[in-house]
Length: 201
View 1: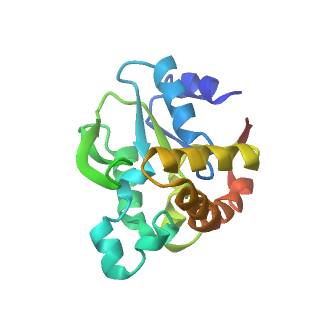
View 2: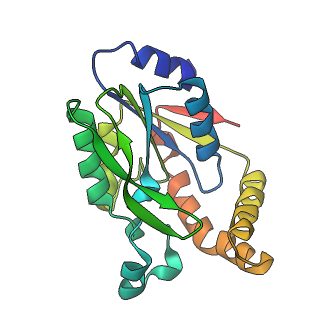
View 3: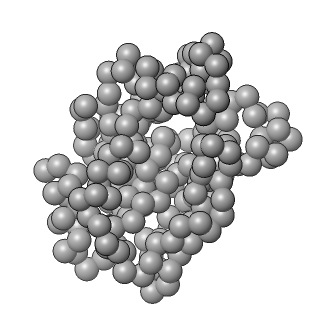
């Protein structure tokens, strides 16, 4: 079954279902999420992006890791796991979540909400299957996981265009993609076999 059929089935269940969408930077996670939003309008399906748990630039600078922003250690992984546990178990209350904004490279706290009406939560991010550091608790909270598999040349081209859109020069975008982004992509790629399903694009 496709992810859309899985969502339809999950909406009929008497519990809250967490479905994870994983992929390397530029693989098309956000595009798939938008398609899901269009197909399932209303209050039954919500999105919880991992990117809201980026550590702030201030913290990254203090720790000397601003130059590798996007690596596993530049997120509040334990905070993310704690929120997922709350989302999965608490169907009685509205739960507010942070949202990351690329245009300012920062997250804004409590900007989105998962209401008590939500029955399917689409969890989107790079490290949902990562078996190290604080991320190890994420996988067991997901009912299903979907790894987006996109040809590397297309993914890299998309990623360079994205970085240029948000202010980097062509050279800066290329260097970041082939440096920091590619190092992260290798880590994410290694988790592909842990996914419930692989979506080839």
